[in-house]
Image (cartoon, rainbow, N blue to C red; front, side, top):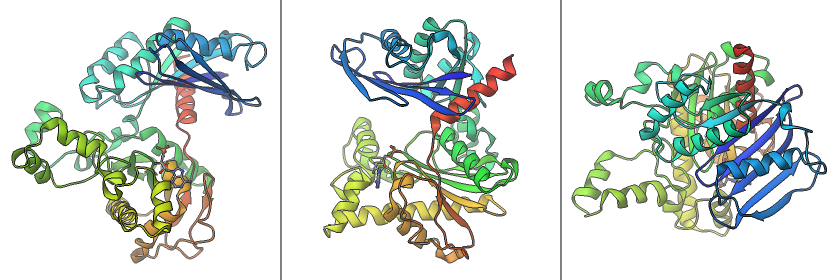
Length: 400
Ligand code: AMP
C-alpha cells in the first residue's frame, strides 16, 4: 500500500511517498516559492540523484501536478500510475479541542478545521490549500488529516487549564493545546518498541528540541502534559521565541516602553530565544561554534536554554509515577550532543547519568545514559511523515 504525505505551507509544500508494507520512503520532494515565477521544485527518488528545477508554479494544484508527474515519470518516477496511491495523509496544525484524533477529511471535518483557523491563522489555511489541491488530483482516495494538537487531547484538566478566571476557558476557549504532537507520539512509540515495553504501559518525557521546541510527559502511551500552550510561544526558549516569561514583562513593554502589540509580538516571536540571548544566531550550530571561540553571550544562550529544558523535564516528571526514558529528538535533540550533555548534567539530582562517550552520536538512535542511570536517556530521530503515514493507514483501514 502506497501513501502520499503532504505538508503544505502557504508558499511551500513538502511531499513524501511511502510504501507502507515496508515503511520504506520511495521518494520525497519540496516545492518552494509557490506563486512566484521562479518557484523551486526539488525531487529525490530513493535510489536516485536529487533533481532541482526552477519552474513557474502559480498555485498548489500546479505544484502538486508537477509532483505527480515526477513520481510517475518513466526515468525518475517510483510508481507507474498515481492510481497506486491508496491514501493521502495531510499534516494539519490545529484541531483545537474539536478534533481529537486523525480523521478522514470529509466536508464536515474540513469545516471543523476551518473553524480552528483563528487559533492558527497562518498554518491551518495553508494546510487546507494542500488538501484542496490534492483532492482535485486524487478525488477517489481517502484524505486523512493528522493534527499537531491531537496527541495532546488526552491531557487532564489540571494540565490544560490556566489559573486565570475559569470563564476565560468556558467562554473563550483559552486553554493549553500543545503542539509537535506527531513528533512526540512517534518518538515515544519508537522508544517503547526499542525497549520492548507495550506502548500503553510506556512512561516517558519526550524532548523535541528544534527550531521550535516542546517537551511532553507521556503516561501509559498518552500525552498528559506539555510545555507549549494556547499558542506556540511558551515553554523552553526556542530559536527565536522567548519561551516562558512573566506576563508582567509584556504589560510593561506595552504600557511603559511604548511598544505596540505588533512590536512586542515581533520581539517575543522573532527576536528572542537563542538569537536574542546570543545576539549571534538562532541556530545551535552557530552557538556551539562561538562557544568554542570563547564567546560569552553564546555560552549564556546555551546555559539559559539548557537550564530551562532541564527544569521543564523535572517539572513534567511530576505527572508520572515512573519514567522509562527521557527521549531527545529533532534538530538539536538528535544532533547537538554538547547541548544534551549540558542539559543532562542538570538532571543529576535524580541520579540521571549521561555517558559522555555514548552521547557522541548525531542523527541516529541510541541509549546515551550510563548503565546505572536512574532513568534511561535516549536519542530517537523523529519522523513526522512516517507517523502521518501510519495514522493515515489506520484511518484508511478503519474506513474500509
Ligand atoms: P529542526 O527544527 O528540527 O529542523 O531543528 C533545527 C535546529 O537544529 C537548528 O536550529 C540547529 O540549531 C539544530 N541543529 C541541526 N544540526 C545540528 C548539529 N549538528 N548540532 C547542533 N545543533 C544542530
